Image 1 (cartoon, rainbow, N blue to C red):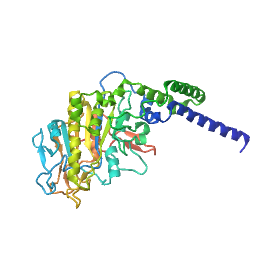
Image 2: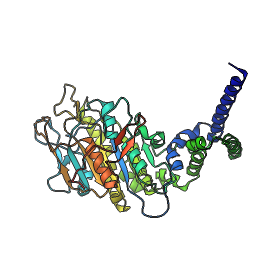
Image 3: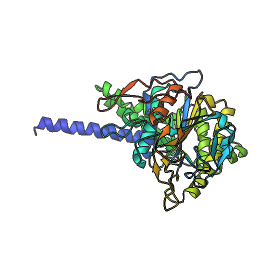
Image 4: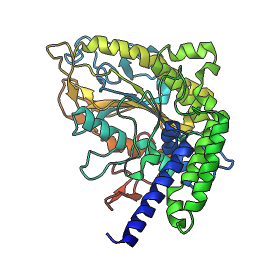
Length: 431
């Protein structure tokens, strides 16, 4: 290599290392990184945050593992496939829920049940991808999740917090896909604990010195690199993260501010606390909140599994619906409750039910959608044919429609492919 080439190589190496080191100064260690990703869309967005009514939002209650439709939203009492599972009446004549949903039954006038969902994915990982994105897995494209699409397509609602949040995320939180990691959900855990990554791990004076160092590095690195600096947007990202860390809106995560009676109504569980935190986050303008209830996989001891899970789910979802209504937020918020598929009509040798994507259920409420109705029917004898079948894409299309998002709009994937926001058809019965 010539001397000139060596100098250029060393200069390029120095520039890259100096820039990365400067970014590390800005981060003040690892505490900023997740926050920076979560807030980058706000830093780069030109959307207005001024005034007006807060746009609609989505809360996804994710029942991880795939709950049984027969023990939740589509009971068939007295049939062979029910295998002893009982049903209860609801506030809407003719609509029943499985036993255990006494509190949700009281809210049925606000809830629609989609009982005829079908998919071609019976594997947990693939089905999860389908339900969260509306698309089947693709070897060359990672699709954005429902929440990522909402954050990308709708204007920011004036919040200083990440607009996409996953509470109790487990191993598979919602992702931004080809829209970029800036649309990944910001992960938090049991709201009884502290929000991660929002407190600096070093004293403020040291932070101030680091920001001054970063300012110096940015100013000199930016010379002659205007467009490259704009594309990185590090300064805006750092400022957005600092804004959140100093924001009064961080109190939205603090459910201890709520009355003890309301905390009890949501239920003394991480999931119940997560649902309450979701309502508080929606209040301050967060666009999409995903709350996960794990443990719905019932290959073994199906009845006991669902009895225990429903004891957590019923008070949380019923109180969430009522709480949103009392806060005048229900019509502005879509609440979707479902898992990746349903469970077989037949009980296996371990007293469990196996995977069944051929006819399963989802509950949906709010967002101006029609409540007190059911869509579709499954076979009471356990066959694969359903009446009025619908796809996961149809559910997504329905939510986008009520949010005012054009489902025909195409975004360009990283492979250069135009991909429609949804290939589904909105459910006319709910709009």
